[in-house]
Each structure stands twice: as structure tokens, then as C-alpha cells.
Image (cartoon, rainbow, N blue to C red; front, side, top):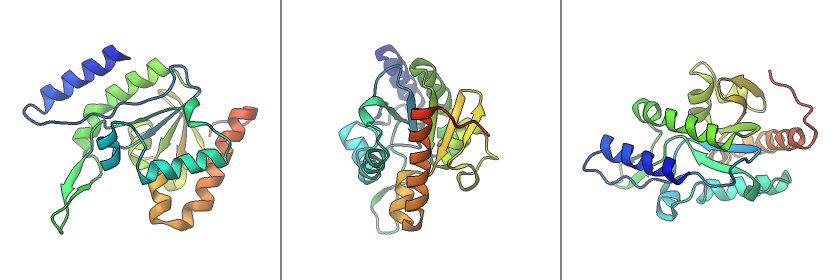
Length: 193
């Protein structure tokens, strides 16, 4: 894993020559049954150097606990490894969705990361990682709560934990999707679509 991280850091430094990109690498056990992948780190993730530690991460941790899953047993990462930002109308540095170029640059690195972890299933959190792994025709509204068979293996699509912060009506759907995943991991009786 250290070699992988060093290679990725060198790659990013070459692509973004002269820019300081703070990389946030995945964390968790090699061989984890489940690999969670979000779109990109936010402000707190960049500051702390860990994935999903901001508000969305706290929300994720809460839902994992409710579903009886332990984050310590999962591998958690992002598709894009640095925080994509823009200047808001108020003049503040804020998060933005990764560009297609950033997604294309990091997609091969995510595929390598998945190959090293070898999870039973990959859980995509939101549209960006879902489309990166299952194709641009996939949308989270139609795919959430389902297992899909894709090139990397089994993918389980979920809304991003931040979506529940912005749209509280998704709270029950998010909980049900996570409970369905937990039941699958316990019983292995859910099939792909």
C-alpha cells in the first residue's frame, strides 16, 4: 500500500506540477469485505488527511452503527484523492463536484486500490463513484439499494451520506439501503440485479 501511495503522489505531483495537492488516501484493513468509495475529500478530510471525517462522515458513522456495521472492518476511500474546490460568490473556498478530467485521472488508481483490497463488494456513495464504476448511464436515484455486477465485481449503490444532510426526506431510504447491505453481509442472500 505504501508503494501504491508513493506512486500516486508522484503521479499527481507530475500532473499538477507547481500546485500543492493534499492527498487523502483510503484507510481500513486489506481484505476488508466492504470497500466504501465516495467522490472526493471535503475540507475536514483534507485538513485531517482521512476520508469521511467531516459532517458527512459523522452521518455515515451514525448510519453504519445503526445498521450494525463497524467502520474499523471496512475500507473507506474516495475516487478523487484531493479536495476539488471553487470560490463561492461570497469569496470563500468551497467544495465542488470533481471534473470529468479529475475522474478520468483517478479512475485507474481507484481500480488498482480495489484490486489490492479485494472486497466482497464495493459500496458507491453517490453518483460520481457509481458512474465511474458502472458507467455514465447509471444514476443513483434508480440504482440505490441494489447490487450491480460491473467490471470490478459487485457494486452496491447508495446515496452519499451528505445527501441526507441536504435532503432529510432521504433519511429513511438511506437507512433501509444500509440495512439491506448489512443483511446481505450477514446472510448473503441478496442477488445482483
